[in-house]
Amino acid sequence: MKDNLDRPHTPAAMARMAETLSLDLGVEYDARIVSRRQLDRAVERCNDCADPDGCAVWLDDHAGGAQEAPNLCPNKALFDHMRDGW
Image 1 (tube, rainbow, N blue to C red):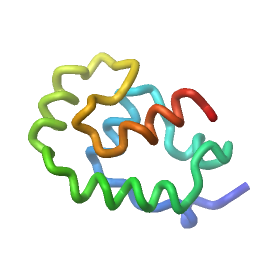
Image 2: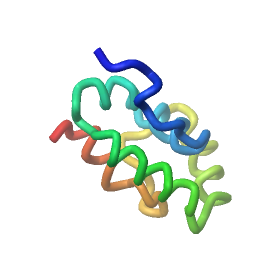
Image 3: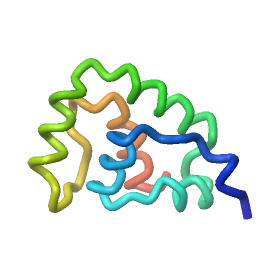
Image 4: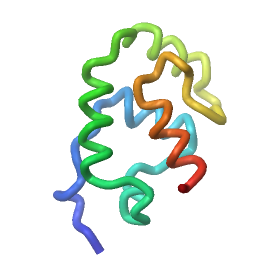
């Protein structure tokens, strides 16, 4: 079992997006669906997001949950990967 110190700190928006999509980043990491490197790069993409206001609006509009991340999300492909488990 890996300890939490090995996991990257995720931005609030990225954690909120995962929660909205019913994904648990820690579980995905432990199951080796995503690697530390993939999560580190996802954190960078989230921090460099071109539309953080649009993200916040989308998250507010989908507070009850969603099946997939919006196209504006720079981590959409990674979230799709986690959802599909491949």
